[in-house]
Image 1 (cartoon, rainbow, N blue to C red):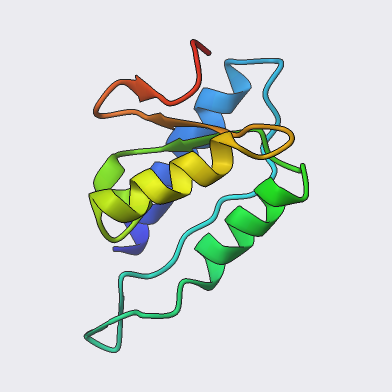
Image 2: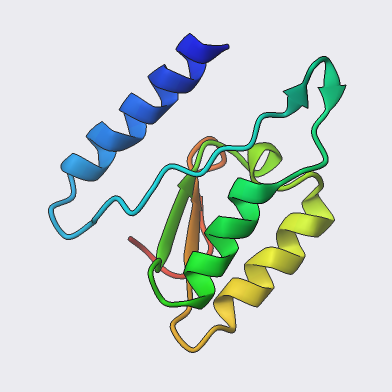
Length: 104
């Protein structure tokens, strides 16, 4: 599991290096399971949303919709909230090839 996380983190660091106008703020990741049980503490996701609201972030890149939120309906609510911020935040879902606000 740790290798998988490190591979994904390296993938995104390399992707960001390929776009000189992008800046890595942080890698936000919540463990899906803690001690074999579903993790209900989404501290990292909450920090991500807080950083978006404070204007630190204008673009989120994630592997897929299923890894963004617990459900599609939750994802739609968060995407709407992010798009209505004073400085709207776009989300790129790599697998689905979706960018929520325009082309990047």
